[in-house]
Length: 99
Image (cartoon, rainbow, N blue to C red):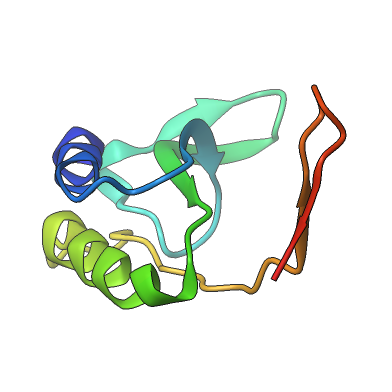
């Protein structure tokens, strides 16, 4: 599923896309894909978390593409969280970028 979303986002040139493999615990996960973890003392499912930093004018289209391509109708489809980014600093050159 994440491949379909990532491909669709690349087609529109979504910037700064990061995909992170994660383990999710809680009641919003699909019970058919649970795994047992002794380290976490419970059950979990693996998912992919996408982080995208984009301009304000790209938010709506990126959100809509994620929803369209990630929706299965099953429990655990995920959520889209939209947060402002006040500034970024390039590690290599120390360049500060603000809104």
